[in-house]
Amino acid sequence: MRKSIAIDMDHVLADIEQQMIKWYSDKYGVQVEAETLKGKPEQEAFPDREKLRDLLFMPGFFRTAAVIEGGIEAVKQLSEDFEVYIVSAAMEFPQSLAEKKEWLTEHFPFISWKNIVFCGDKGIIDTDFMIDDHMKNLNHCKGRGILFTANHNANIDYDVRVNNWKEACDYLYQNR
Image (cartoon, rainbow, N blue to C red; front, side, top):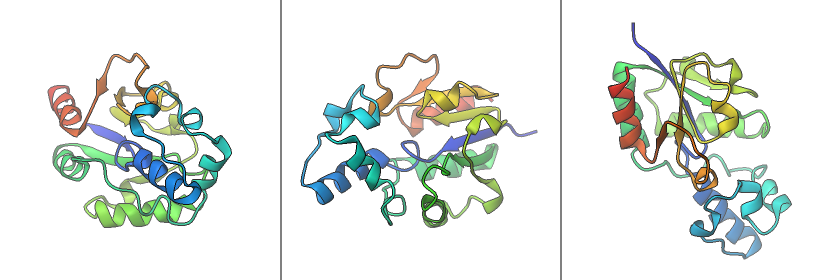
């Protein structure tokens, strides 16, 4: 029987950090450098928390994010040997549901709609592994949590951390 993996979207497959930086600059004329975000929660990393949050409700924000380097190839490879589910806590930003589905259809067409889970709380997910960038999701993971490095989690100590998709694949194949 194949083991299962839940893979988060934001900051794991979709480069939401770069999207925030670009949109914040375009909308408000303030350039935020990625290196200044290191170790800060997202809501504290930008000059105005409310303006940042407003971006997340703007049409197109989730639809136009870039893919994290190596993500497509890694997920395609993992799909051959694992049962892969894309899981996103998308309910907080309801307009993101359609945008995230369209984004996945464009970039990950090999993932069946049956393997896409949009939810409010990832604690319902029961897979062998979960790759996520937030501890709030990994703390309730029923399987083995894997912290995917992002600037906002740089100062968090977690026993299984991967910095990129190559490291994620290496870990998963060594532990299947």
